[in-house]
Length: 311
Image (cartoon, rainbow, N blue to C red; front, side, top):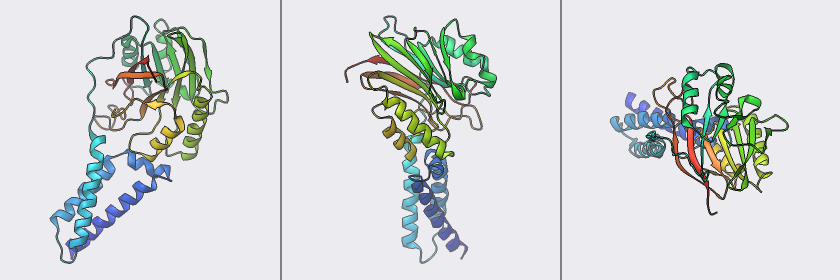
């Protein structure tokens, strides 16, 4: 009887797990479980183990269905479980100005090693850095780098941009209702729009949706220029929210695939989710994209090399 009840409970657990995951299509809070792939994996492993070991009479068909469902939960997570190794080095800096070396970094207002963050940004020798959560323990970081990055802009929620290249225009979202700092520079004879952003968490669905819609409007208003958008989107691959974000930011394309950036050196030894991203518009190509080692934040920085190319 105990084996029978455990197998029934395992199948109910699988049904509830699938129900929660699928409900993420219309409930953003539930969609978090699609992004945190270890949760459904553990449900699949535990339920599958119970169904494999215990074989009560009368549950042959249900056991087979449950084992298949368990296997699907585990196998679907395999692409997201592959932690991409950190590159040996950052992409080379262009001496001719034909490529931009850039990074996006949620500096974290509770940064546990601001000196390491400053060293990373200084030694990285980036052309541009998209920053988020500039405040608290990290509030002095951009000022400390003013000699290296003389062009700087700060906006709501600690979003910022710092640049080595001269700026044609800079500012914040005019309503200051969405975390967005922008700059416009000249790149290979044409304007290039740069935006740093920091989305609300999906657990605050109304605010998250507003940020997505507002940023979509800001991007759409600048389609005559090439654009680079980067920041902390609090959205990972595998979630329904990422699909909605992709549609909202079209025609920009995300270039950060398969990277894991959060949590960094916090709670667990390795980052599990990729929620920090870089997007580029048509006419721009990115290469040598990667995630950097820990620099004191709970996020790993992401970086790439961008150049103009054929659409």
